[in-house]
Image (cartoon, rainbow, N blue to C red; front, top):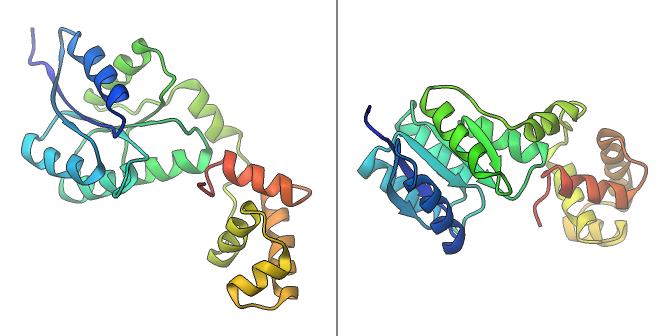
Length: 207
C-alpha cells in the first residue's frame, strides 16, 4: 500500500466539512490532515501541513476559496486543489480554474465522484464533471463586460432603474442607457430581467 493521499478540507459549514472529512477518512488510500473553516485558515494550514490535495469551498467568509487558491498557488505553484461549491455558473468555474484549481465539483456530487476527483488531481490530472464541462462549453464566449458595465449590471440585478443607476454612479442617464444596451447585446438577452437572470446564473454577479 502506497502512502495515503493527505488532504486538507476547507469549508465554512460544519456539517458539510464533517461530511466530506468522513467520506475521505473512510477510504483506505486517503486521510484528512487538517480542516479549515475559512480561506485565511486554509492558507495557514496548507503551509503547515503541505497536503497532497486541498478541497476548497469557494464561498467562505473573509477570504474566499478563489483568493485562498490564488494565495496558495503563489507560494506553492504545484499545489493540487479541488473547488467545492454550490455554484456551477461558467464565470465561477473560469474564476476557479484561473486561480489554479484542477477540479471543480458542485456540492451535490456523489461520493464516488468526489473520490474520483481526489485521485485524479492527486495523479496530476484535471477533473471536470460532465455537467461542469458542459456549462463551460455551452457558453458563448465569456461576456467581455467592461468594469463599468459590471457595475451597471450589479445595480440592474438589485432592481434599480436607469435614473437611480445614473445617480448611484454619478453618470448621465443616457450613458446608463448606452451601457444597458451594450450589456444586453454582450449577454445575448432581450431585456433587463433576462440580463439579471443570466448574470446570476452564470456567476458574473454574486448576490
